[in-house]
Length: 76
Image (cartoon, rainbow, N blue to C red; front, side, top):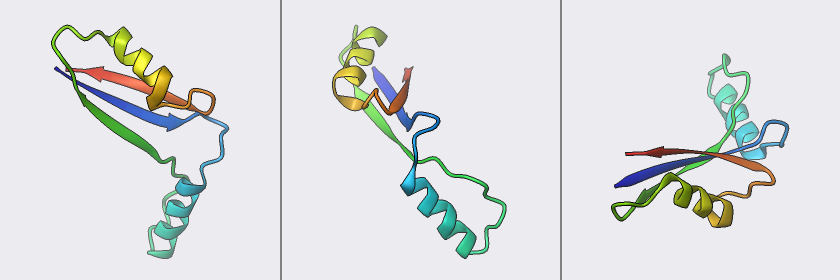
């Protein structure tokens, strides 16, 4: 069983890495990019029977800083 956790900064939290990417894209001639938000994807190989609630507890405890980040879980 696999889970994919996508972690992104919450709306309203400054994203200096995203801004650096936006600026660099503009310098490379990609002028149509108005904004960039950068995040991370974490793929977990899980034992059978692991629940979405358990993955959410992992996110709350370690994988995301829930003060400034939000997360989404995909289970397969």
